[in-house]
Length: 221
Image 1 (cartoon, rainbow, N blue to C red):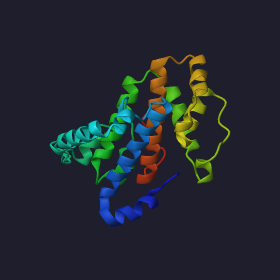
Image 2: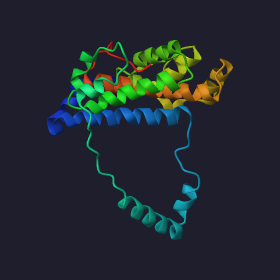
Image 3: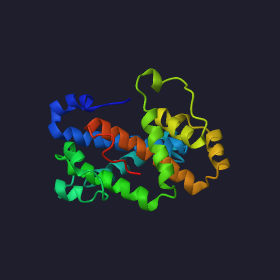
Image 4: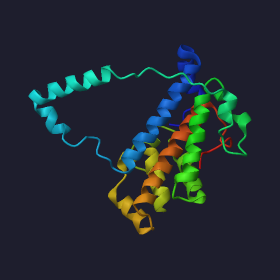
């Protein structure tokens, strides 16, 4: 849904600026889930369904995993960069003043800067294609419950169809959609980078909208 700062307000009333951390976590889940759904990754680790049916094996494995997790240091690490330090990580030409809503949590600025750097230096997709993915995702975000349910006409272009479905209901990605991308010249690497681009655009748009950043402030593409 097209969330906005008002949707974060009740959480702010409870945890203050910590609500920004929750927004980042929500955005990150949008990223991870979409990569998995778009590439049709099986949610089950091989062997686990069988393991769950064998009680004599399941119980010792659960106890062993609990023992291991209980000895991990999962405490949050203090973030040491200042807001100005985090702003300095953004690409040249970005309007840093637009990031004022994130001043209480400079780690969000660094997360955006890292996403931008990753796409610029690592993606096999060119800037024009990444920008098209970003635009398709922004337009496809459901504005109502009805738009998040059922079936809707999707763009005829295979890239834009992939981004549209990946935004509204990524779990409905089909093998035919993947085949259409392959016919358009996408090999395995470009398919992976396209799925990452769609997931990243979804992450960015939701974080941007929830935290109140203007649309023109910066998109990591």
